[in-house]
Length: 205
Length: 221
Image 1 (cartoon, rainbow over the protein chains, first blue to last red):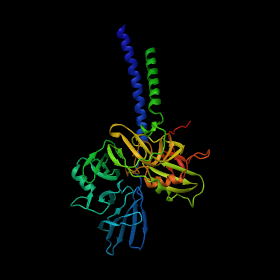
Image 2 (image 1 turned 60 degrees about the horizontal axis):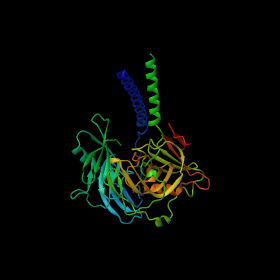
Image 3 (image 1 turned 90 degrees about the vertical axis):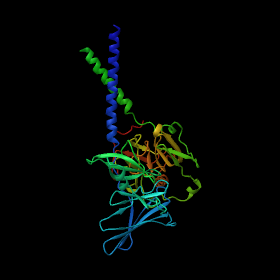
Image 4 (image 1 turned 90 degrees about the horizontal axis):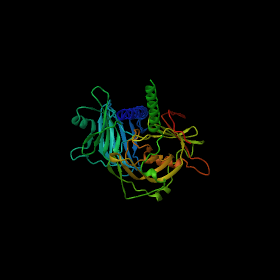
């Protein structure tokens, strides 16, 4: 009799647990579908001065600094691209980098270019290749003006491939998204500046 | 046969109970600080914590706030104000009448859901402290600037600890660049003289200028 009672109680508990587990899985599945988000286009202000010069800029999140890009279209179809930072009133100009690009090479300023403390900036080359600079124009390492994120990533991580840099998780952590060999979505990583440490994350951005 | 029926009914009851328990509306964005009544808190020379790391806290000088901010649409736009947040594209839209006065990337809930629904700003705070989470997820952030709560302690506010807007990054609030949050704060209205604050619609997706798609909105009693 006692064993029979025990079996009934266990069966009762198993049914309750099964019911709760099933409902939890249903809710989590719905939440997972709801929280997926897609990327936002980068916003930059672009204006033309003379026909062969284009400028654009990206303000820092606190509104105190500007990262500017000036593209000069040369006669031989190459481009000279100058990056500078200034205070919001255009004072305290610092030259960050000058790129000499072929006709088909592109440079853009991401919306999330500035680190939260305004110490670093990153720019995009050819779409999503992130290059990180010191905002004051000094070399980021003793022997390097900038960090080439896809290149360093490829040297250190073999299992996944660099896809994009989305922005800053903190003052010195960039968020990098990856793809797997079969082009499906890979994990996200932190890229620590300037140590170049790469940390795999449990969630995807 | 009767036993099977009983078992099936029991399973259904547990399943239904689980749905109620697990899918209830989010009650609190900041699990620690939401236990206090919201109030202005300016704490300079302090350190914040986010994702297990110390965060320098920007100094807030309220005397500097007297400088006229760039108030959105102050000269041009007329009509009712309305803020829309598109969770699918992580974008905020602010309209006055038919005029779009602000469109900017934001960061909504990653570690907690941002409630979908139609709300009104019920309090505006120049700055406050927000804290919550536990373990590696613990955060404690003083001087969170330009806070506008629209549902319980879910709010629009500036975020100085990250710059990853356009991607989910919050515990349920709507994070904005401080410069955008400042302008929106100056433009939007809190409740005044019996009139509700500026409406805030959180949408699963949004089609300009005013189509807010909400699958399962919070019902406000």
